[in-house]
Image (cartoon, rainbow, N blue to C red):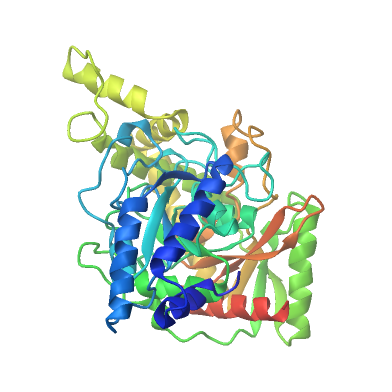
Length: 468
């Protein structure tokens, strides 16, 4: 499954296989994988039209793009043509996008072909894809287990080899955690590396656009196409994916992530990788990140606050679902939101409204932002001494469907390893490093300094080559 993109592009370019054949093949794989509930819709008609356009270009000797003929899937919170954009919510079940996300536009401009839209936790609120209004997505390795979330559907279609890559969003671990649970590569880029324009907003200060793939090289190829400034998103920065990777000689293992609360099989796999780095001549040390202890608390203050603001637009007036038989405007708002939002959406809106209220803004929201700055300073101090930091991606392998649904705090704790990098705006990458005794994948998280995404991918390539 390694480096699939280059193989597909080469085959389409030399005529040994057409883009249409690839699209039909991958759509058939999607249909044969329906039991996983990973896809909410297929965009077959539009995908075949685009495939025929690419095949015509190839026959005519025209440039078809760096991703010519490569099928892919988008998480269904990306605005994309061909099927409704639902964000896995009943509020948007019939919403047809009036435009496409910048990331999708850039991929299509290089010849990639979107064949479907993946399931997620509604509005990306969750860590298991159990909060979707359209049913639970099942793990690619064990259908009794969760896929992770919120980008669970994208992770599963990549792990099942339905597509070579799939797009996701990562706000606090929503790419890395499902990538770990399903045994694929998944990147959260430096904040601002990829435009968020045309993607349903969750928490604007931590939302990032990344992808899943079966190899670091494929991740790099996709990110290089998507990354770069966009005048429609003022938070975007110059393309960090054109930077040269740094040499990695000193690696810090965040000691707060290697406690007895982490599954023994995961700790053992991480320690084995550390030994491999030492044998290769790297210095690997345990390092201290004290603010990690408070990162989950600050995350679940800051992010719900931004969610409560971003979800205010779903009121039954401007677009989306509109409740029937409402007698007053207030009743219309209330009924629309009650019927359209799932429980987790409501929980986060209420928490966010609470911490932003006049009596609690200083006590909670302002304090959390100060703590966030302290966390960023701790990362900066560590990166002054170390070239890369690592941790397990998750404290456990994929848990059983329904295991944590009645305990939101326990569900939130599955993000403990991933939220620090999100709060700091720095890149992080999940790398598969084996399986536990039950055959479930284990993930290692590589964390880099701001803008150092290519160093992480370079290290992941080295790790992959060392195991071949």
